[in-house]
Image (cartoon, rainbow, N blue to C red; front, side, top):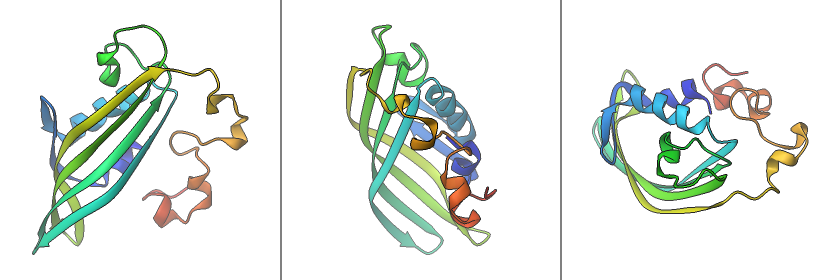
Amino acid sequence: MDEALLSEVFHEDARYIHGEQTGAITDFIAYAFDSLKSFESTQHYISNPLITVEGDHATGETSYMSYQCGTGAKGVGLGAYQDTDAAENVIVGGRYLDRFEYRNGQWRIIERRNVRDWENWHPADARQVLDLPAFARGARGRTDASYHFLPADRAGSEGK
């Protein structure tokens, strides 16, 4: 949940295609964070990147799985698909189809397409990590332990 750090992955003029939603990456990042803030916790895994480089351009496909824990906000983001007011957890599997460009000494994404392959919605369990004491669980954003433990170049551009 670090909007600034996520923004560094994309060129400023990058575009995002997510189902029927297409537009500037800055608009999508704002939408995504608004949606994700409505969940109590989230986690996002990416794996199996396949990247082909041709000069200063590249294409890639990367698998992902995301987990959103808690109530969500009905009508917002992933919550737009909720048909109940009950707390639900959402697991989504899919792939990112990316176009990269090398500019000013940096590779960044210029276009990202999100392809969802499956989703799993289920009632939220009362026994969640949120019941753990604060020192034993991760935090969302720059209060997380990684920002205070990892060197600045690994924890994000702003470091601690």
